[in-house]
Image (cartoon, rainbow over all chains, first blue to last red; front, side, top):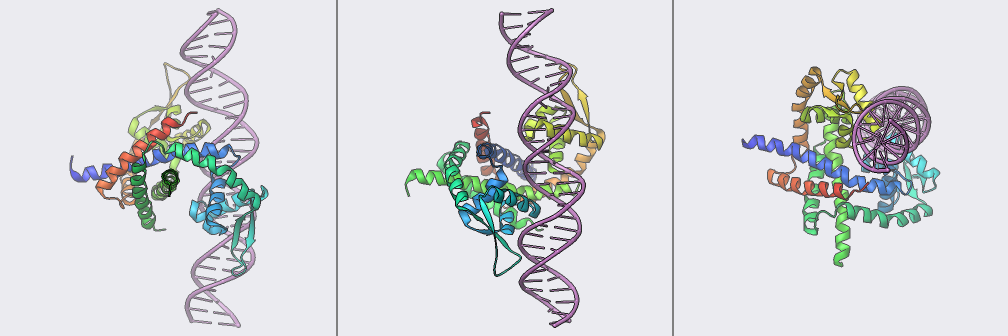
Length: 151
Length: 151
DNA sequence: TATAATTATCTTAAATTTGAGATATGTACT
DNA sequence: AGTACATATCTCAAATTTAAGATAATTATA
C-alpha cells in the first residue's frame, strides 16, 4: 500500500475510533448524570461554574459548544431549579453572569463523587501510563482541530 | 501528591481532553456534512450503508447510538430524499433492511472525497506515528468502555 | 457627536432526539 | 397448540437543540 494511501486511511480510522471511544465513554457519564435528574448539557453548565466560578453565559456556551438559544434555555431551567442565578454585569450591561447558588454548590459537591467513579470506570481499560499518553495525544489533537477550525 | 489521587485526576483529565478533541474534530465534519444538505445523523446512517451494505434498521441504530424512534424518523427522511429504500426481510418479518439506492450510492461517492479532506484537515495536528498511537489507545479505550457498560 | 459595526442575550419557529408504549413477529417452554 | 418472553419497528408527546433574527449595549470610526 502506498504511503500516502496509508496516511489517508489512518485519518479516517482515527476519526472512527475517536467517535466510538467518545460515544461509549460518555454513555457511562450520561447514564450517571440522568440518575441525578439532569441531562448532559445541564450538567455541563453546572460543571463549568463549579470549576471555573461565575461565568458570562456567552463563555459557558463556548466552552461546551452549544448555541446561544440553547444556553438561554438551559440556564432558565437551572435557575428554576434554583441551582444557579443570573447576575447582570455592572461594567458591561450586555453581559449576564451565571453563578451557582449555595444549593447548586452543595448539589454538585454531592453528585461529583459518583460522577468521578463513573468516569474512572469508563476509562479503566487504560493503565496509568496509557492514560498519560492518550491525554497528551488528545490534547494535541483537540488544540490543533480547534485552531484549524476557521469560522 | 499521593499516587491514588494522581490516578483519579488522570481519569478526569482524560475525559475532558477526549470530549474537547471529539467536539472540535466533529465541528469540522459537521460543517462539511451540512454543506451537502445533511445533518450528522443522516450522514451517519448513509455512511454505515455505504461501507457495510444493507443493514437492519435496528443494527444501524446500534452502530451510531441513536434511539429506535430516531432511526425511524431519519430513515423516513432519507427515503423521501430517495437516497435509500426499505426492504422487508423475508426470513424474519419483524426486520426491515435499509439499502442505498443508486442515487444514494452516487451521492455518497460524490461527497466522500471532501468528507475525507475535512477529516484529514481536522486531525492533521498529529503526525502519522502519533495517529497510529492514538488509534491504538482509542480502540482500547472504546472497547473497554463498551464492555464495561452493562445495560 | 453621529454613524456604523460588534457583541451578548433573548425570542421564536422548526428540526431533531428521546422515552414510553403499541403492534406484530419470533422463540422458548409447558 | 398455547403461553410467556423477547425482539424489531413504529407512533406520539415531550424535551432538547438549532438557526435566524430581534433587542439592547458597547466599541470603532468618521
